[in-house]
Length: 144
Image (tube, rainbow, N blue to C red; front, side):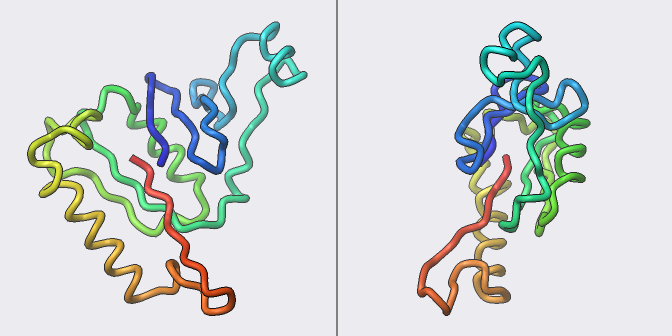
């Protein structure tokens, strides 16, 4: 699950080792510390880009129009670059914001029910959760 911490920045999902990432430059890259610190952290003056084409798991996105931590332009830019988006959901309540995904009294109705509906649909209609070859269960990535 990608969680935003600051406008234009996200904390990467488990597959990205929970490192801060930036969309400020218009590119989906690791955090830009500035040329000197980038050289220390990345052995380059520029932060490395994430190769989003390598993401193969299905991704569902959930966003809110009043989310002050996730810039709407950055959100849509990211979604447009992800190769396997299976579901996009905009919370149908204009005042819903970032913290409401966890703490809002109406989150179960506005968000969680949609997540459960999606998971139920995917588990019935697809093979996203179970692989018959190795008998292991898998999950989808949910971006909030």
